[in-house]
Amino acid sequence: MSTKNKCPFGKRVLKLLKGIAGIFIKIWKHPRGRVGLIILLVLAFCAVFAPLITRYDPYDVTARCEKGLRPSWEHPLGTTISTGQDIFSMLIYGARVSLAVGCITGLCIACLGCLMGILAGYVGGWVDTLIMRIVDVMLVIPTLPLTIVLTNLFGKSYFMIVFIFTLFGWVGLARVVRSQVLVIKNSNYIKAAELAGAGTWRIMTRHILPGVSHLVIMSTCLTSAGIMVAEAGLSFLGLGDPTAISWGKMLAEVQSGGAMLFGYWWWIAAPGIGIFLAVFSLMRIGMALEEIFNPRMKRVSSGYKLFKSLNSSYIQEVFDSMNDEDRPETDPGREGGQA
Image 1 (tube, one colour):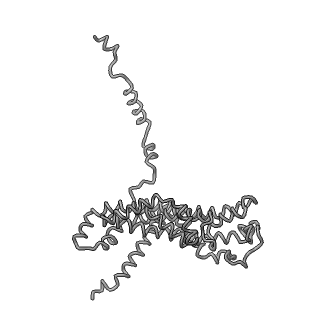
Image 2 (image 1 turned 30 degrees about the horizontal axis):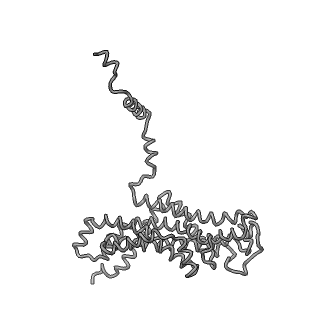
Image 3 (image 1 turned 90 degrees about the vertical axis):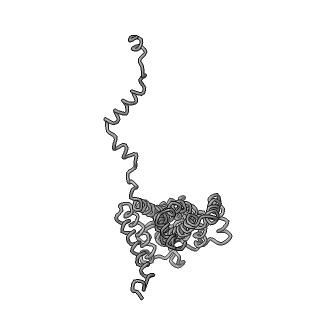
């Protein structure tokens, strides 16, 4: 047996890990991506090592303190008015739920949308018609009322919230991927693979998927940012998991606890800043990936470059041409004198 085919799965995994590491290196070298990656890594570090960062566990009922304490060395962000929980520990532990919901939902949407888009674009026929009709129907369904109904019927767990976001979030990516696949499937290397006898699944995974991977990766980052904001909105409306602590639930407790009435602005600012930093970092990474995968994309706007290329002589020529257009082509007085 040849030594080249002893462990094909291990080689594929190693190649995948090298590709992921290469993407992280490119993001780190990009100025925008580096800022977003640093912020995201700091938030992820706080979420993973939350017990080492804060001494209070917001899920432990015995760790409650006096209610309504103001910021101090013991409690950097004070305590809540209603339950006496340490706000700083709630902020750190809340990063776990918010980041997990955003990233997991973004990955689920990317997988489902990519699969449906490739199937619709490459297989075509009744498969394309069925998937596109489902997409058309899903786009006109009001998401928020249906989300309220589903959470009341099946529970308010974050598993259900991830499922609902995935159910309604894949349609946009599927349309974009399908349009790209319609272009790729007519390429020469796809035709050559078909003539060589490659199966449909192999062509979709080994040849078409790499061609749309940049769209999927960028969509995952941007979608995760949007999902975090949506989760915060649902939790603020009381549709989140009541047993878990997230930044959205902290904002809901801000309203119910009367933080605005008592002037506890730090209680309001803490989860808001956390959501902003997470969304900002994911957006920066998404914009960096867009420029990395599309080198022709210019960082400076075209309007600024056009303004920079203009000089006084060019502007004067434009005004002179406008004056020439406004002048009459013939002078009646001159024609009469010559006659």
